[in-house]
Image (cartoon, rainbow, N blue to C red):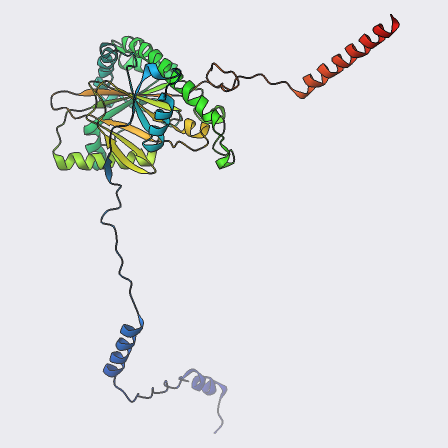
Length: 387
């Protein structure tokens, strides 16, 4: 009987692959093979003993108080004040200025007026919040977790002479903002005079020493840096009375350190001058070297170094961030940090060449002078030979 094509296709569809080849059993059991492998790994592998740090958080280091510099000795003949200032800046990043001429009553009057800033209800502060476009106003604080604990330690407000800030604050605090601005402007003028004198003395030393260690990369003029020439800004901090227990205080302080290390300085500046109502319990300095703290003098003005001065010094003196820590069990306290940027041109100095104020003559002017002198010489020779 003949086979039809359909039956052939059906047989092809029923084709099945052959079963896999059986694996030959070894001479040893699985248990024996595992023991051999384990013995081999134990004899060949050597896991190093790692000593890991207990914490990755930077440790706070208490140091001796930085140098106390009398303001009257800055720039005085045969005074070592400038060298002591620079030595303290190199070690700690700051120094203390005493007898600076800002009276306690004068500064406390401005701080008392500044306390009204923080009486503005939080729900009304949205229009005056800081932002990348507006680097002034209230610091935004979210009410979650650690930021809520940090806000219990201090509130922050950045003041400057900006029309936008003034218009917003006049609307939020119409009763007292004008009086506050008048007191702040008066205090700021005194602070700027101190900063100008300090910069003049330090500027001379920076120009005395060459800055070729960094091939001029860090020794640029501050005129080309962001924030230079924008004037002085003031960061106001309201330190709440100590209502936290020791554990929450330490946790909030650690969070504050991390925030400062991440943010650094929000504004480019040369010097930062810190004033605190009644003195600070501690003063903390944050930098790439670490976290140090000390107990400042009650009536001293603490001056830290900013990024512009680091550039002017060719990288010899590093930028740091300073912050006072105030512990009060009875009342809130106010501290101020004035961020000073020098003008576009270097400060005036007794020596015009050292102060950067020497006059330069262009090549074209030199050529013109040479031509004039040459013509004058030929005219003189011509008249002298004719008579």
